[in-house]
Image (tube, protein in one colour):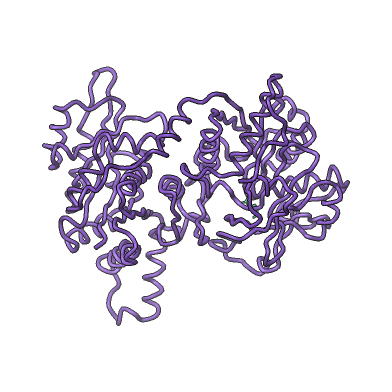
Length: 551
Ligand code: GLN
């Protein structure tokens, strides 16, 4: 029988529920248990696909094309397994389902209410992944903070489920904050006491408390927390601020979060977690031998969460190369033809980020021209690839009006244009080209040497595509379409030949980079950045030819 663990949050948001959930999942997985994580978000959007990154950070895309919360990215990066549409549910989706059923007459004239109809639907969805008989443990992270009005139906659903499934089959972990008051030199437990009290007013008591803290929790304090919050002392887990999120699984192992969870679920402990590869990664991450500086050009750069998966993929690739990756955020809105050299010349490589709409677009194009001409390694992701095509069409092929029809719907030089099947779509959510698609690579390409295979699969999230009318001119001019969708022949990758590393990808490689499987494109990109760095400092030890070797 599948066991269920729920992770709730107290006191404040941003305590890192996703990381704690992913760390526990990692430890259980490393003990041999098949584990998955799902996230329930209490907002009314049906999914985060329509949310501006300023609202909720990056929208993460799964293999099956679900637009999801960025925490699913952490789950995949930690567990090295795929998630799916079923792993992310919002209040909007729950209500949409219940209201649709009401319109179909499914409730036979009953008054449709939060309890039981909404809570029943929440409970049904909480158990969907567990019913597949694939997982030993399903961890559910509840978005929001205990005490929020919108979280109430979820807390109520967990209360009911805990009772229905019975002790030993279901566990509630509450993540809370123990603030340190510098002036008093004291750790304070009161906010946690209040948060647990708030939960118990709603009939739910936590079995384990994970306490975020800047200072170690001494024994007496743990005892005090246990006493006030109705948990055993060994169920008070210290979660000290970590230097990297990837250190948290080992911290949780030291605190025995996995052991106490398994004991409370009446599950055998199994073997000690096998985390050899993970530790190797951490070692490389913590003790780099060199350093590169990467420019990340986008319009949401002031918000770290907006490009979460790209930043994490760079961390994975840096560790692979035993190289510290410093990311310099560059706001595309403030880039101009006049200042682009000053801002980019000292960078070892540049990424132009994905995005929508025309804000900051000319800055991206100016930046791409500069890195193309000055041979700074370049990776253009989705919109970044599209703008690399626009830049090339304008400045090399001489099509001065070239643009994407997203930004200039009237241009007659639309090198990037909307796919036919997209044109009639008016609904916003879930209507882009989404999820995993195959791509066929040309054998004489850098991409082939990087991937070491002619067939790859990558995830997409966009409406516009390269206009194949321009393919021959691009090829002849040196910007070669080297990756195609084998079914539709859509261009998925372009490479500029007269350059050590200039790759534009229509897909999002960042979604598939994990700790145990850093993405080859990012790994090769960092390697090219290292070469640029060494070259600039007169210590180049290898030629760009060796940027990537086939596997
Ligand atoms: N706005 C572009 C499109 O829809 C690119 C999207 C993206 O970068 N994810 O095609």
